[in-house]
Every structure is written in structure tokens, then in C-alpha cells.
Image (cartoon, rainbow, N blue to C red; front, side, top):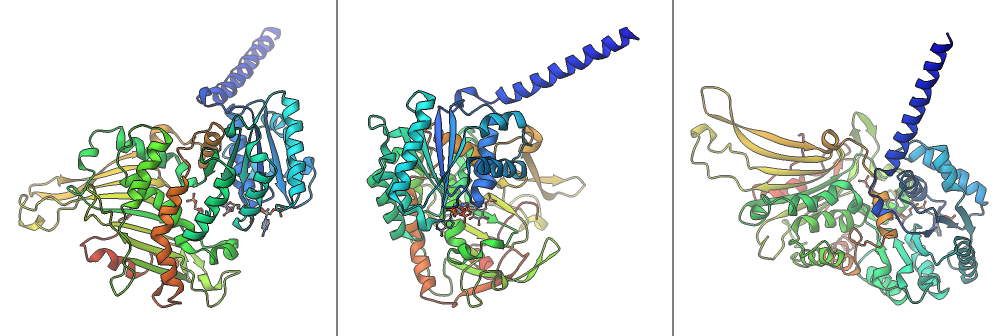
Amino acid sequence: MLRCFLLDFIRYLLILKFMSQELSSTRQSRDSSRKAPPTIIVIFGASGDLTARKLLPGLYNLGFDDLLSDDFHLIGYGRSEMSDEAFRQSMGDAIGKHSRRPLNEEIWGQMSSNLHYHAGPYDAPDSFDRLSQRISAIESSIGTETQCLFYVSTPPSVFKPILENLGDSGLARRHRHTPASSKVVIEKPFGRDLSSAQELNAIINRRFDESQVYRIDHYLGKETVQSLLVQRFANSIFEPIWNRRYVSCVQVTVAETIGVGSRGGYYDRSGALRDMVQNHVMQLLALTAMEPPSSLDPEAIRDEKVKALRAIRPLDLDGDDSDVVRALYKEGLVGGEKAIGYLQEEGIPEDSSTETYTAIRLYLDNWRWKGVPFYLRSGKCMSRKASEITVQFSRPPAILFGEGNRFDISPNSLVIRIQPNEGVTLTLNSKKPGLATKLQPVELSFGYDTTFGSDTPEAYERLILDAMNGDGTLFIRGDETETSWSLLTPVLEHWAGSGTKGLGTYAAGTWGPLDADKLLIRNGHEWQVSGT
Ligand code: NDP
Ligand code: BG6
């Protein structure tokens, strides 16, 4: 009896030991060279949606992976009055709800004691002076000069006073000899058009060195988007055919099934072009079209992206064959569920002419891509959630394989699925088994899930860690955003002058208006999306 009990007890101890080793090995399994230096993060807009859904869960997961310094502190800044304790409580709740891993009391206990809350307006210099004193007090408790990362996560209407006050209070350059000891992360949208983006850049550049500035585009933090560079430049088979001689068109689709939900107020002033295309879609385009960078240095990569964006020919906006299509969703069925139309959504004026869908045909006038159409589209309330890039290759000459196949040889295509079902599929033609020679497209597919498992860091984890570590590769440089705006601002101006003329509609739950198909037909192409 006693022997049995002892054996069970020993077994129990061994299991406990194994479990604690598992936890610590999971926590330490990430690349420890990426561990962030001591940092005080100040989040402006800390009572908001993004902080709760993405920023704190992201930081918690970095803490879980032991990638935060023991001297990591966070100050939430907002106009609402809140005690430190209430802030910790609400952040704990948010992590419980939104983190990809369940809340571990031990890890959260350590982290949360370093969370603070600072109440104040965004346009009051004295509140920033008090913030500065609070930061100095935390720094003294750490006992060494500590970098500060200011994360601007408010609506864009208050970006300007926050940036000005960071400059005027001296927080933008806390330790004069090392400007990078203050960094600023700026959420999207970065401006509403070219002139507002230029104005915002000017405000930033007067107070910060560009090396201190991190303009967020969370698409760049997605694992699959980072992998795009690896797929292109760590495989020798693609580069020789990644050009006008072999590629017949490139398509970028960023489709969502959700409508505008509770964000109507923001969205109606924005629309698909500003909300998705100017940033996420143009970044995917730039990464697909750019030349190989000379190194992985952030500036080398960003230089190549800007060059690709600058090569885009101005869009043709007039006439029946305009390069741009816009539409808004009407009621329909999304995934079998009834969806209301855009004009019936909360906060949307009945006569709104804001587009919830846009498609663009464009050309890059450079040696690699001259004459190859790039088709971009993004919309809300569409048939399926799908963000993907399709590189469609030219058809082989239909000389072999019999009469019946003459017009049937499908083009090869490479589909890079950003989300969901992350992976890459190469479509080839194969012979269908049988006595006749019939061709059938077949797929060579790789899925992240099946190959690597699904424990992938979220975009915000990667981006916040990179910013703390001073790596700007996955952030947007000022000239990139201005180049993108200079292509798209004429479209916005054209639409603003046209009212509802040319604004189409599509039923919620479909792939968008018919006019978007016409963009491709002229070139003998059609929209591709994997799995359809
Ligand atoms: P919220 O609308 O939730 O606002 C964040 C906080 O800012 C609020 O809690 C409030 O805090 C303060 N605030 C809100 N409105 C105003 C105002 N008019 N004037 C001054 N302060 C205001 O924003 P989100 O958290 O959703 O987004 C933050 C930023 O991140 C935005 O730039 C957004 O475009 C961007 N973003 C958001 C995404 C999301 O999914 N939410 C996705 C991608 C980007 P308080 O009253 O306490 O000061
Ligand atoms: C945001 C847009 O930038 O991206 C939202 O403001 C959109 O409108 C979201 O829903 C989509 O992001 P994701 O990561 O879900 O594709």
C-alpha cells in the first residue's frame, strides 16, 4: 500500500517537473537574441479597441515567450479617468478574451505589476510634463537610462497634438546623445490623401529623426507577408520567371466577409481605397513587384519598394475603360447569413457614396513589368475571407496534346495565400489518367498549418517587438506612404467630383460588381481566388 502510494507520488512529481519544464522550454524556445531591451511603452488611446484586442494581447504573448525585459513597463494614456488597478484589471480581461494563448496567472501577475495608467488630454502640455515626470520616476526605479516607445493608437484627429506635445515636452528626444532612445509608433490611417500625409510627415520630421519613426501597417507583420520575401529571394526557381517574359498578370485580392459593423463613423469617411488599398494592398503589391534588395537592411528593402511604387503609371480615370472600379454592398447573404446593405448600417448616411469595394488595374513602367497588368481588389461583405497574391504565368503555346485541348491549356499560377489557410499553391497541368490525352490542372500545395503547426505569432507581436528592437524593416517609410498616396489621391479627387456617378453596387456575399470583371476581360484575364 505504502509502496503504491510512494510510486504514485513520485510519478506525480515527475509529471509536475515535466510540465514546468514544458512551460519554461516553450517560453524560452523563441529566439532569445530577439529579446527586447528595457523599455517603457506609452500607449496613447489605451482605453480603445485596438489596445484591448491587439496591443495588450500581443505584449502578453511576448511576455509569455520571455521576449520582454524584466524592466518592461507600460503606461496607458487616455482622457478617461482610471486607476492603475482598474487599468490592470481591464487589460487582464482583454487578454483573457483576445490572446491567442490563455492567460497564465503567474506570467500576467509579473507583467501587470508594471502597468500604469496616466489620465490626461492629448492637447495639454502640462499633462505631457507630468507624463515625463512619471517616466523619469520609473526610469529611476529601473536604475538605468531606458528607451521609451510612444505608441499612438488614437483616432487620427489627435495624432497631431500628441506628436507636437511629444516634441515640445522633450519626450521625443529624452536622451539627447541617443535619439533612438525615444521611438514613436504611429497607427494607420497615415493621412487622408497626399497633402495630409505630407503634413503629418512634416510634423513628425520636425520632432523625430526618421530612424525613430515606425509607421504601422499590420499586414507587414503577418507571417505570410514576411515569408513572401523568402519565397521570392531564397528560391532560385522563381526569379528567372518573375517578369514580363513569363508572367501574364498579377492579382492581389484582400476580401473580407465582415461589413463595417460598429465602425461606420470611421469607415464612411474612409472607404475601401483609404482603409485597405493605400496601405495593405499597395504593400503587398510592392513586395511582389520590387527588385531584389542588395541586403536585408531595412533601408535597402524600403528603397526597392519605393522604386516599384514609383514605377506605377498614373491611372486612367476617365471613360468607359477606366482603370478603377468602385461599389458599395447592398443586402445579401454572407456565409448563409442575412446581411444588411451598407446604407442601412449604423452611422452611415442614407445618401453615402463611400465605396466598400474597389478594384484597380495598373501597370509598372519598368524593365521587369512593362505591359504586365496588376489587378488589385479589396472589399467588405464579400463571398469569402481571402487575402492572396496570384502570379499568373503565360499560357504555353497550344501546339501539342490534341485538338480538344487547344484552348484548354490553363496557365500555370502561383498563389500565395496570406490568410486564411496560409500557404502557397503552384498550379500545373497534368495528364488525366486514361487512354486519351486529356489535360487537367493539378496543385502542388504547401500549408503553414500542416508544415509548421499553428502556433504563429500575431502580426502585432512581431511589429511591437521589432520596434522595441529598433528594426524598421516591416514599417513604412515616409516616402513610401507619400508615393502610394500620390498614385491614389487623383482617384479620390475624381470620385469626390463625381458624386455617385460610376459608383456600382454588389450584393453582400458576392465577389463584387460585374464592372470589376470588365477590368480584366480586355486582357483576356479573369479574377482568380484559390478554392473556387
Ligand atoms: P478607438 O476609437 O477605440 O479610440 C482609441 C481611444 O482614443 C479611445 O478609447 C479614446 O480614449 C480616444 N479617443 C477616441 N475618440 C477620440 C477623439 N475624437 N478625440 C480624442 N480621443 C479620442 O480607436 P481604436 O483603438 O479602434 O484605433 C486606434 C488606432 O488604431 C486608430 O488610428 C485606428 O485607425 C487604428 N487601427 C485600429 C484597428 C482596430 O481594429 N481597432 C485596426 C487597424 C488600425 P480616451 O477617451 O480615454 O482618451
Ligand atoms: C484594418 C482595416 O486595417 O484591417 C479594417 O481598418 C480591416 O477595416 C482590417 O477589417 C483587416 O485586417 P485583417 O488582419 O483582419 O485582414
